[in-house]
Every structure is written in C-alpha cells, then in structure tokens.
Length: 119
Image 1 (cartoon, rainbow, N blue to C red):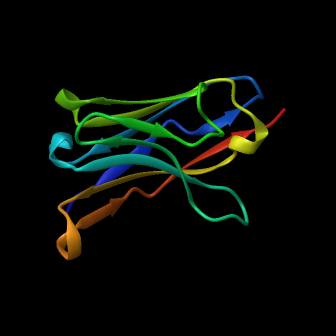
Image 2 (cartoon, one colour; image 1 turned 180 degrees about the horizontal axis):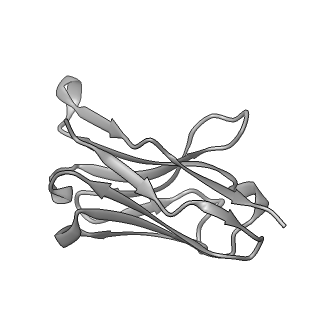
Image 3 (tube, rainbow, N blue to C red; image 1 turned 30 degrees about the vertical axis):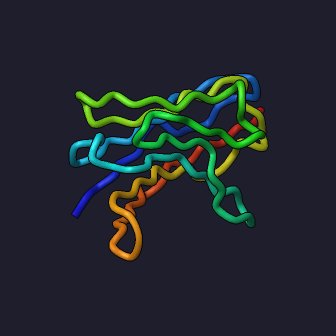
C-alpha cells in the first residue's frame, strides 16, 4: 500500500506564500503521474498542477505564473510552491499519484492539507 503524506498547509494573508510537500512512501519515479488537487468548500475537487512521468507539467489557468510544482526524486518528495496567494486559493490540497495504465491502474490520494488565505 502506497502512502502519500502532505504537509505545509496553514493560514496565510493574501499575497503571501506557502510551500506544500507530499512525501511518498515508495520511489516517486515509479509513478506515471503526480499532481496536486484542491477542493474548496462546496466545490468539486480540481486539478491544480500535474507532473507526468515524461517530465512535462501542466497548471490550471487560475494558478499559472503563481504556483510551481516540483519533485525531488532522491527524497521521494513532491512539492508545490504557491506565491501571490489569493482568497480563492483557499481549500484542502491533496497529493495524487497513479501508476500503470488501463483497468489495472493504481491510484493514490493523500489525506489533504488545509490552506486558508485570509486577512
């Protein structure tokens, strides 16, 4: 069983920064896809930033230019640097990963970390 453990959430003022971390309890390079999702109160979970096995990244339009996803393979760590935070960035942030393809694909979610942007 793979575990993903997030940390780094908290309360921050608008314009501030936070760095989220996701520790994977296995070789992070074994995943086909790694990503951060978030879920705001009363809204569906949405993709924030993704990191494919080939190394390409993608971001939601709402965070482009402000958030940066990165990985540290030696530490099995996925990170999300969030700058210029806005109240709309408030939500629970989840680390997500999958390996394999088709019906046999294995998906994993972390427990989530709360990010609150408020003055």
